[in-house]
Amino acid sequence: MTRLPKLADGKVHPGRTRTRWKGIKKEVLVIDFRNEISAFDKLLYHGQSVSALRGRKPKKILRQRSVYLKRAVNEDLKTLRPFKGRKEQIFSNIELSAIELRKISDIVGREYVSIKLILHDLFENNSYTAIIKTRDLSYSEAFAGSGEFAVIILVHKILKAKDKTLIVIDEPEVSLHPGAQSKLIEFLSEQCIQKKHQIFIGTHSKSIIDQLPDNAIVLLQQNLASGRVVCQQNVKPNEAFFHLGLSPANKKKIFVEDLLAKEIVRKALRLIGEAAMEQFEIIPYPGGAKSIFTTCMPGLFQTQVNNVLFLLDGDQKPQKAITPPENIPEIDTKAIKEQIKTFTGAQSIEFSRNGGDDPNAEQALEKLERGFLEYIIKHTSYLPDENPEVFIWNNMEKTAITALCETRNPKKSMLSSPD
Image: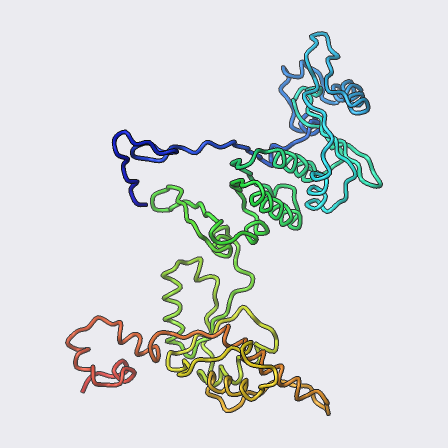
């Protein structure tokens, strides 16, 4: 980062001192899904200390205090002081808005008619109780799933947050199935755009990471040499999964002409990092470029295999510019054939076709050829230099021995000693 230029004496600039920017002032909202627990669950399963409950069993407190909670729900009480000390027990009692209901319904995948949220201390834990109504049921958070309750609280808090809030969400995947996780990210993205929030999500979820662009993914991992946690930015989802211990389920295949080309590509990927290398399978195809063009490409195109790259030697690159099919009129089938021939060098490409007397066979072939041209343009690239031998030769350290071989064919120079 370049150093901030100093301000001249007496000059004032909003948001900075003479030598640095001032810290940004933001509202901060922290949401930890592991802590988004209802009043009922906190009392029964996550317990208070014996002193806090004053020796009473949680179930007994639940039976005694539920009477007051029911009254608060039925009478829509905003305040309640039922005990001797006259301490306030109801801190908020609200009905969620139509927008909140719609967002919660979308994430959870269930249509809600109404949701009432009551923040209270009747169970001696200062937590929320939710009264949930669908078209068929009415129930409290005691009968709701933990993920369902957590989504209700999250949506309510985020929609209530001020514009440009810094929101930190820890492990939102807890208790949420993959479909709900995907819908949650859609909701958060929408809120970022509408209200200019900045959201940090701590997660190990593949469903969440898959939906993020590379520049939104930050990988934190321990440096084994120093023991420190290092930060890597702009990480591809598959690389992040690799560091989480997930092997790529569908590696991208790279077809090359021979074993030497394979080793060059492996070396290039290794320089990027082990995680990047694990995302690819490099396949030398028998028969070289001609077989790739006439056998490999048509088969993969017709079976709609798209996670593939054909990385050919530089001498296979067309000498003329290729016109993409979208720029060729539908009726000009001859131009499509010519472009395929220019690209591949093959006189003709054979496609697998249905037998019999199909009256639409000619139109089907024209459609195949147009699609094939689009496919090979999209999925083909080229190695530097004419072939792998020339590339290695041009990048070797120059010595007296290599000087003796400068006039020889690079492939012969690498396979035999100079005369």
